[in-house]
Image 1: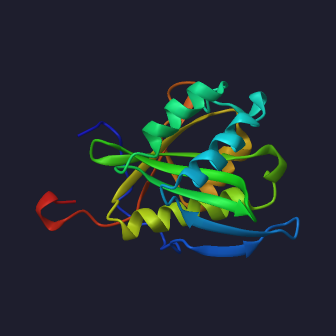
Image 2 (image 1 turned 90 degrees about the vertical axis):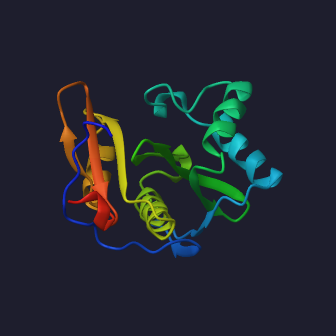
Image 3 (image 1 turned 60 degrees about the horizontal axis):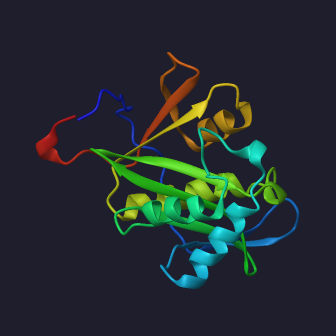
Length: 184
């Protein structure tokens, strides 16, 4: 158990992938759960290898291909939940839920050529929908407090600040009621 605090209120439901939508740039974006294929892994490596260094936060994604591959091997593990936003055969974004004790940590990355087009919001909602149908009860994340766009995105989706005592904000969301045997 962690010291993290989660609202007692359960967040609104989110649609689980697969789903598609038209972004603000009139591109058809499809969000799908990661299928474990070599093709999807290579497409993710390609996106992260082309990721703008100024968009890296908290040391991720890593900057070199070998480190990207090592990092992806960890977060594409079967215990993690991953969704990918596709523009045709190109990865526009990726989001993951990584188990951490009694909750999951969320991380999201949208390639710079796809930012500010509504993809991040849809990607997070799809990941949270996937998490809920997969039995995830609680999700948390950290974000640099000066990253107003990201903080606003997380608040829009339903995250609440649970800790603001450092240069990072910790934000949480509850996707489901706890099992009866755990209490409130």
